[in-house]
Amino acid sequence: GESVGLHLPTLSVQEGDNSIINCAYSNSASDYFIWYKQESGKGPQFIIDIRSNMDKRQGQRVTVLLNKTVKHLSLQIAATQPGDSAVYFCAENQNTGNQFYFGTGTSLTVIP
Amino acid sequence: DTAVSQTPKYLVTQMGNDKSIKCEQNLGHDTMYWYKQDSKKFLKIMFSYNNKELIINETVPNRFSPKSPDKAHLNLHINSLELGDSAVYFCASSQDWGVSADAFFGQGTRLTVV
Image (cartoon, rainbow over all chains, first blue to last red):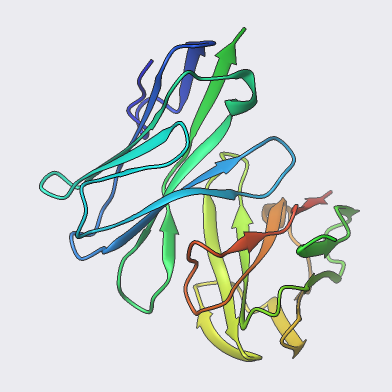
């Protein structure tokens, strides 16, 4: 399943499928990006980060892709599990005051 | 041990009251933050303190006043509470200025103003 972030804030996928969560960032000067996962009733938790000198970074079951040309970031989750159900945020460091700005968030629901 | 702890977890109060939310981190980080998350899950930074010094103060009503008695604590005091203040408030900390890979968020304080 795939979301378009701002336009489709919810995404439902079957357990075992791959998930793709998209994020359009606003500032071409942003040089550092982080994906966070927020489970219900909890604070955001770091998943993976990427710097602007890279276009891909892989973690455990997650991959982040960065396309600076179109200012687009995506998070791919392989073999999605029920425990992946959460709201996912991308955050960009706009390189102004070294602070991060969070995107709208996408709610991922995994169907067993 | 909880890395970033906030109290209380839930707070229900009437309009016009003054309330405080406390935050403590035991990670030895130099920087602490307050974020506000609205009902649509939008997260916005409010304040950032580095070594007890205010670094970021986004456009926030002056009814909100952060206080950092030491590096491990950043409390948020809110005067004359309004209905629009209802939200979940998150405290976070990181070693360096700017949320980075080592940033930890607290569990949040759900504030409901009635």
